[in-house]
Length: 342
Ligand code: SAM
Ligand code: SF4
Image (cartoon, rainbow, N blue to C red; front, side, top):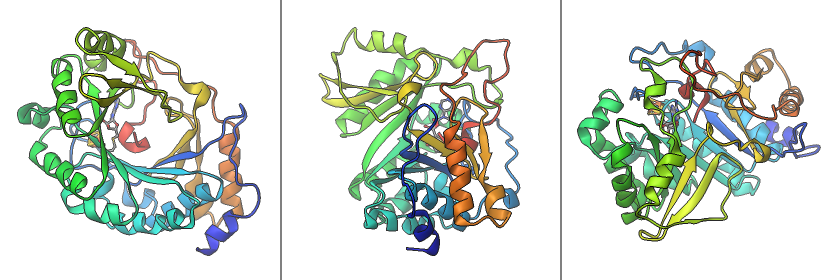
């Protein structure tokens, strides 16, 4: 336990917002950089943040640990691509002390999988039990186009390594009307055949990208109706306090999730907040509300100043989001998903 951990563990350790929702889940983006350039996520020539603006791993640890001291039970490390951040394993190993102390129930990661072959075992050794791997297609050519240059073989080798290391893997696939919609049943069958759960995600209007996002938007209700024309989908009583709804596909025995932030409102039970790699705390993915925790740390704030800033931000967590996808409007949220962390 560090002196910071000790300071945070004093006082009430529950984070509750103004609507009585308890925050138990923090997503931490450790970098805005990535080795891929997925068409729905980034523009081809992204300008990344100057290094000085990005929190050090020690600063990220201080903030994440403050949240654990305040009752957060689940940490998800994301990005950008978290595994391209230098010494990210040292950071994750450091956070695993909260698993060992029992304060944290789950330490997990969302990754594009390109570096997993190297990192799967160390992740498992650090106490990570489940990871999400993003994969929108099984076709090498389409994968290369959607990621602007990615090699699918590396992701597949990464998934193999993760399963060999005993990690449970969930596949995240963004549903894109023209690109992968027709292939999604095959992707689901493939994943379920390997014992992998799948979650389908609707494109969200975040950040300026090169393509017209409305052209890619595919409603998951329409897709679900199509899947139900040949599969039996049984509702599962699972909820993670987020926008995902889960079913079991009777024919494959596998789990399928639908993340529909645009077509459904999921905010009443929202239990999560997000920290960007620059130390900005977003209490809602779909709104601009934010608190600058980096300013607290770099301004010489104490552990209790940090706790106060977190409590104040959570207290004003918005009731719901403002997503829209109309053609004429700019993105509902100007920041890219890679800055906030998906
Ligand atoms: N690089 C890692 C990855 O791809 O898994 C972690 C970060 S990525 C931003 C997290 C998730 O957000 C991925 O599953 C990605 O497909 C999804 N994503 C990115 N941009 C999105 C958008 N505009 N709408 C919906 N999902 C998006
Ligand atoms: Fe990179 Fe993930 Fe965004 Fe793709 S979705 S560009 S892998 S951060």
